[in-house]
Length: 281
Image (cartoon, rainbow, N blue to C red; front, side, top):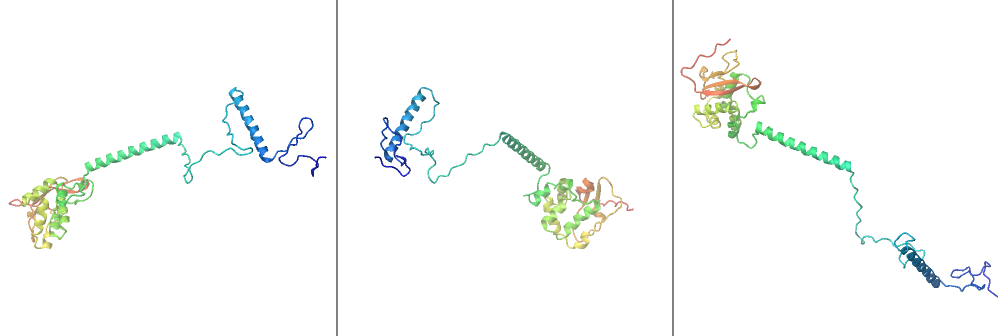
């Protein structure tokens, strides 16, 4: 007589076959290892059937699963990077409109830079820089600052008085040369130095300063001779004045230039006899 189970149903424990064989005889019980082998055999049969159907075109082609996969297991994970190696995320592709915009902006930046470079070159050609030049080289070029800046006297009498004042006062040598020579045109600088016996204006100024013996009467000797200022050229002769305490500097011809300034454009030694000064009003 067959042994009864606790639940009253035979073959309910794991590893048994509860389906009876043909003829009403119960199927033999299978242990866990036999059950695993039987399931693998069923999987192999299913694989053969699938492969045959695939070769006949009855099912779409799909990658076959490995035969070593266990029942109920998960498919193997794809191969990953070696341990310790960083995985770089794929770089996002820049939108086409953004690439086009960046190209246009770059082109505009290049155009603006070229315009700035061209403007700088043109400016330096028109207005040369005096950086790196010594005083003698700078004053030989005439300065040219009076074209755009208020650097000269707006009164011709004051312009000549400033020559005596600068040569007589104890200015630094470089400042003295610039103040005297840059108040003259290049032609007047050359005439001034030649008439007084020097090779150039930058050499003449310190030599004349060394001849000043009494500063006060020397720097205040020149004064206006007339209240009427001509609008063209004007020549002011040093022999109109009683110059004491230093060298006589000769005759200066002046011309009105930009912004009402007066530039010394010519020089000559004082004439003999000295012409009469203009009548004052």
